[in-house]
Amino acid sequence: MRTPRRLVAPVLAGCLALAGAVAAAPADATRLRPLPVPDVRYCAAVVGHVPGAGGGSPLLGRACSPDSLADALARADGRTRTAEQPADRTLLLEEFKDVDYGGGVIYAFYGDAGGCDATGYHLVNYFDVALSVSSMKGYDNCNAAHLWSTLDVEKTVDLPAPALGANFNDAVRELQVFHR
Image (cartoon, rainbow, N blue to C red):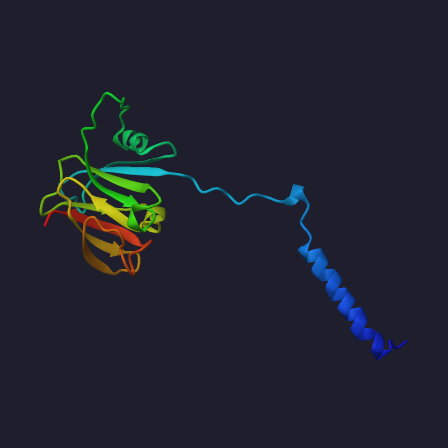
């Protein structure tokens, strides 16, 4: 049996309209799942000043915390700190999630031998941090940083750096902070 041509177009249009209505209808609430909430993490590393065998500063401790940067430092340092105890580590650098120091500090580096000199400290990021850094601030004489990107490009920037620019935004694999 052959379908008359004059019926094909209206039937086809009706089927497409019905399919569009079904696709636009809200899904059953029991099948909806919220998007995963990213972990709010604060990470800290404690590094030594004397270059290690590979030329980098020796890593004395590294940790992340969902609670605070102070907790991350305490975990990295392997000690429990109280509010009354001053930190005996020197804050060298803070890395921020967004440009212009927005989005919060996602990683902080602390030195065990004071602030920066002309040699400074060689720092390496966690992979997920490397893919999230958009700006940074230096402290205690750390006013410059030589950056290596995940794209194997390098450059030197003055600190603080409100934006890292092409090839370095969300791509800072490692860096050397120093005083110039």
